[in-house]
Amino acid sequence: MKFFTKKIYIILFLLSILLIEPKVFAKDSKIQYTSENISNYFSGIISINQNHNDKAIKYLKKVESLKNKHTQFNIEFIRTLIQLGKFEKALAFSKEVWIEEELFFEADLLLGLNSFLKRDYIMAQKYFERLNKISRYNLFFDNFVGNTLIAWSRASQGDKEGSFKFLEKVPKSYGNLKKIQNVFLQCYFNDSEIQKSFEDLINDKDYNFA
Image (cartoon, rainbow, N blue to C red; front, side, top):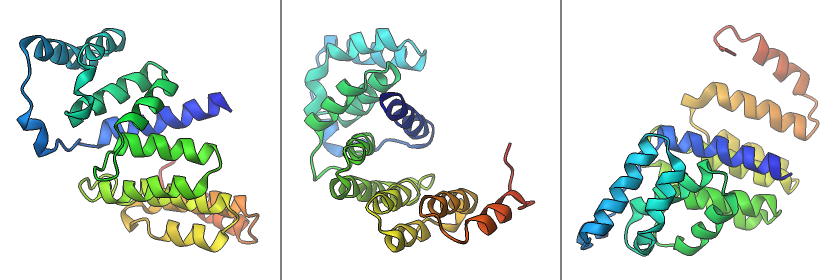
């Protein structure tokens, strides 16, 4: 189960790293930085960009006091912990910095997945719904991640109708991914249409499985 959990975290965080452009809130511009903080912070960012995550986390830990003041720091800190495989620390840090008034993709995703794995599906859906709000600022996600995860939360509760309802909310631009998730859900519920849906998917000439 731990291996499976790590795979989920890694895959989804790689997606967020590649696709999401973090939103830096206005309050960050009011922070006064010391020269030492600036040096450590940017040394951490440079190390991240060079894939030197061990070095990056050492620099970022020196300015961890920024966690309640600087949104971008929190994003970089969590991502670096994940890439180092420090999942429990990333989760604990997410709990520390999460506040309801501020949308935070990485924290909401981590906390939602953690609740899902603990079978607290109501709480998981709360976090996943926030992902939909965040995706309004980023067309790459556009209600795909949140609604897909909510669909699986509903499915895990035995709510077949609700799960397909949320999957249907996924935009048409994600048509192929939506078809795959539809097949998975039908398989999960042992739906009578599963064979037909699977054949339609693999015979779809417009779909590239490469």
